[in-house]
Length: 362
Ligand SMILES: C[S@@+](CC[C@H](N)C(=O)[O-])C[C@H]1O[C@@H](n2cnc3c(N)ncnc32)[C@H](O)[C@@H]1O
Image (cartoon, rainbow, N blue to C red; front, side, top):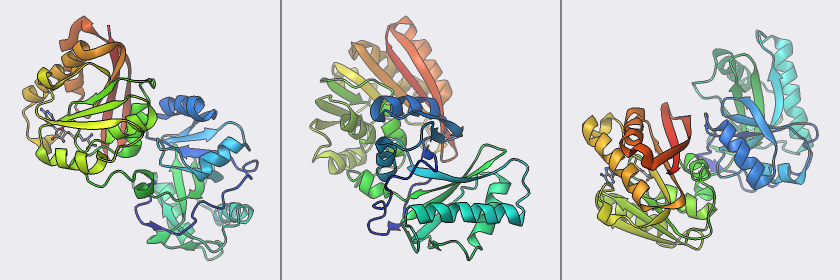
């Protein structure tokens, strides 16, 4: 993940003007949602992107105003935008020539965009390959890179990304999660990553009015992202926990977009709390931390699916995610032929697999 959690230098993205005819633009999206995000990019930004490696899409055209915009303001459903500065070919044993070439390629990008003297963070998650991690160590030792490594205060991110064989060296503006998702003042324990939420809400087509409902809403991230994207006029969040209700109110009392946000304390399975809706979105509870017996979770998932079948508009969508795949399968079976599954995805994030299910009324 390339979320910038540290303080960014001021005017971090100001200098990414045109110049992408030399380097392809790469967008870092949730791993497993590459196809879905390529579709979103086409619809929302008229960008043509294809897969580069897990979690990364590359523009198939270079140089355009739309790519410049994507560099300056990375889409909310992405972890950031980069240019592809260099690639270590498969089988390269990190010879000194190869490291010289990568350094020189990075310095060319730095020159083009006038980034000299700026601070950077070199992001190579532990999940990347051994070669990538070794390359990271070697790059950090270089004294001839025209930017400064400062992981506590930086405006640039160098990201190493692998597809198992090649290592891609990417560089781009760091983005501040606090600035992008400013409404998120409070969290609950298992809050969904907002980038994943922003991608997930786009798996249901935007609508012009109606209600978006989250029966296990926590701090309300999915509803906030949905109303930032689509024009439902109201969002209704239900949660068992009063603490979640407080987080929801703290985050959403001032609204996001033009919609209204309402919270109901109670069980998301309870159909008395539901209302006719256009969209159902939920990051369902799961995991051993929860200490809820499997049959109870299955019953909750099934009730939420059955409530969706009952309350959804004919052209409405239900978009559910959970790491508990068996629970989602159980819910689909329980709904029988009242629900039609449109698509399923598996996104990898923070060491977990998020199963994502998109369905409609049959
Ligand atoms: C995985 S979290 C969802 C987090 C939320 N998407 C967010 O970003 O804050 C699951 C939430 O489900 C709630 N929950 C658990 N069982 C529930 C139930 N039966 N009815 C309603 N909410 C429930 C928990 O209190 C928790 O806030």
